[in-house]
Structures are given as structure tokens and as C-alpha cells.
Image (cartoon, rainbow, N blue to C red; front, side):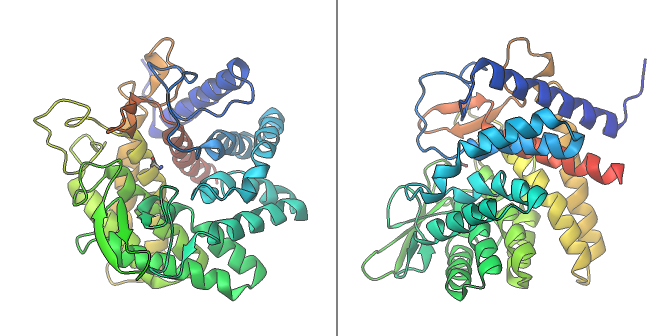
Length: 380
Ligand code: GLY
């Protein structure tokens, strides 16, 4: 019997992830899945919105960067290229998800100015969603709607602002972050999924939700998007206001996580009820938060706050505890024959019954990203 270390388990999980992604590419060439049905990626289920292409290609970049394997780079370039036209896509608010995980690593590897141009254009296209009245980037559903998810996409506008020195981009991105902080992030660090504005006056009307339990509840994935999104905005701007929001989100996260370290889909779900509306886990929220907390731990340590060291340690320990849970066969599909995904027990849209208790592409990506951060640190 061998005693596998945490590092061994993470490496094995990444090896399994590589196998699963290679199978998707072989079985469904040039297809960008969103969620599984019964463990299979290809089905006739609705998309709701087309936002996840960057996660499949992004995992290929993560694999290439960790292993140096040239085949992964060839696949990563091919799948990234398939997304290039999305730089002009004005129908979604997800251009950060699509391009920061694909064209950014590609550009960082090559310094190719054509890749740089795509990133800048994607930032400019996303900025066109800005609503002067209300001061936010509108969600894909309507002009009156602000989503917490957009916090993970606004970094591409900060990136474009930094690269071009265009002050109008920075102004838009800052305004969006501050409006989201003031309207969707609550005093206790929890978040609402959606805010509704009066498009004529710009007045904020109410908090509501599509994917969470209620407008006044804490949808777990939305909180993870906020935690990680504000941390990325802090990385790109150095603005301590963004660090404060991410830490507030993290403190809520840490104090509400169940004992097995994997959240239910909504922190306010009634756990006496069965899944999907009650006791349904969302492994993808854990993966996103783990990756965000690893960054936030480093940022907190460097920020020199009075309690920096203690806070940073708690954030990192929580991230590792979540990953330790996710690499076990309860969540990792390595002992589930025929399952095409990497992580089980994710959720896409409970109300619409899409991808409930399934693998979801963003869960796969952020799991791979978080594990890669830890094993890469250990290798240096
Ligand atoms: N649309 C983003 C999410 O489902 O979290």
C-alpha cells in the first residue's frame, strides 16, 4: 500500500483530466460542450447562452504550460482559433471567459501582435455593453440587467485599458466594479445574482436571480465569481477597494462552507429538501473559489494588512481543503465508468433543469487551473 501525498493526488487528477479532454476532442471534434447529460457531453439540451468555449481551449493551454507537450499546444491553438470571431460578439457578456483563458496565454507565449489585437478588440466589444444610466455592463438577458458573473469578464476591459492607455475603458471597468459592489455585494460578503435597473432613470430597483434560489439568497457560484473576479481586478489595477470586496466574499465563503468543504448550489438552500432545489452540491463553485482563493491568499499576504498572514493562511487552507475533497472519487469521475467529464456533481441551471448534478465545462477548467497552480508552485 502506498501513501499518496497531496501532490501525488493532484498530479493524478491532472493526468485524468488530460485523458478526459483528449477523449472529448477525439469523440466530438471541434465541438464546445457546456454540460453533460447522464455524464455525456453531446446531447440536445438547451445552451441558455453560449459562453463556455474558452474553458475547453483554456484547459489545453493549462496542460501545455504544465507539461510542455507540443500536442496540447497544437490543439490549444486550433480550438482558440475557432473562437476568434467571438471578439466581435455583442450578444454575450462572457468575452473575458472566452479570451482571457485562450488568447491571453497564447499571446504570453508568443508576443504575437495579432493575438494582442484580438484581446484588445474583445475588451472593447465587452465595454460596448456599458449602460451610462446605471453605470454597469448589461447582462446578456436585457439592458436592465446586471449579473454578478460579469465580474469575471470585466478584467478583459482592464487589460485592454492597461495595454492601450485608453482612459475611457478604465472608466467603464471601474464604474462597473463599483456599481456591482454597491448593488450586488452585501455587507456580509454574500452576493445576489442579478440586479435590475430602471433603464430610463438608471435607478437601481431590486436584487433578483436566474440561477440561485432567490433574489436575497447567496447563489454559491455567483459568490465564487465575485470573489475571483474582484481579486483579478485588484491584480490588474492595484485598487485596494477590489481587494476588500474579494476578501469580504472570501470571509463569507469560509464561514458558510459545509464540513466536507464543497458548497451546496445556494448557501440558503433548504437542506432538508432533496436535490435539486435542496441538498444539491455544486462542485464547480468549489473549483472556481479554490482557484480564486489561491490568488487571493498571495495578494492578501503581499498587502501588508494587520491580519494579512493569518487571513492568507486561512484562504489557502480552504482552497486546498476544497481541492482535497474534489480529487476523491466522490467528485472526480476517475472511478465512474463511462462518465465523460472530469468532475461530477456540478450544476448549471437548477430552475431550467439544465446540467443538474452533472459535469460542467467551467467546473472542469477551474479545477484544472487550481490544481495546476498548486503543482506548479511545488515544482519551483
Ligand atoms: N452563466 C454563468 C454561470 O452559469 O455561472
